[in-house]
Image 1: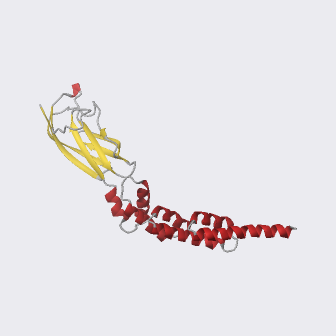
Image 2: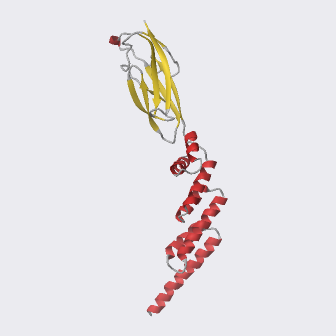
Image 3: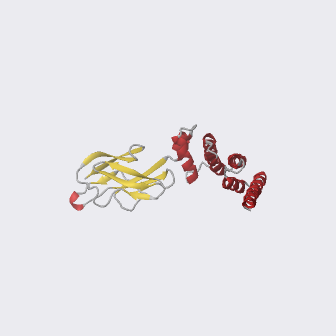
Length: 231
């Protein structure tokens, strides 16, 4: 009879329900949660799914598996607990190359959570190194005095820069301002970049002192170097 089929369906759901309860007791939260969600409105499966997610999150926190706790607290819609779990992950993974740390810190900074902005600024601070000379390939010899060369011969001053730090995969604009303004998109931790080519800046004038300013991302970092061109 149809009643028999209905009873059979109920019995199957009850078996699954009881199995999920046992899975949760055994701390197999993934299996338990999946079953409670599948059962949906059967008995108190919906509330059981919620409590299972919370228990799983608390267990992950106790094991310092903060990223797993973030996932579980998200499933339970526990906003404050999500922020705390992210913060705990950051505190134990202060590594500028860790993409999870970056994602969590970005979220926490936007949420103005505790001192996340301070940690973010310190962890992803960009450091600038530069070398100025008349070689397109020499990134070790820094010069401040250059012999005057007529622009006809195309003498050039080369500015080599290297950025370290920043967030994972960050690129940012580096600008130079002296006789000529130039800019280049530079990748952090990507080695040396030359902001000039062999026709970029000619010694087309005799000058006593000229200040070249190097700016990273507008005015985040600004370095000045005075060079002298002489005959």
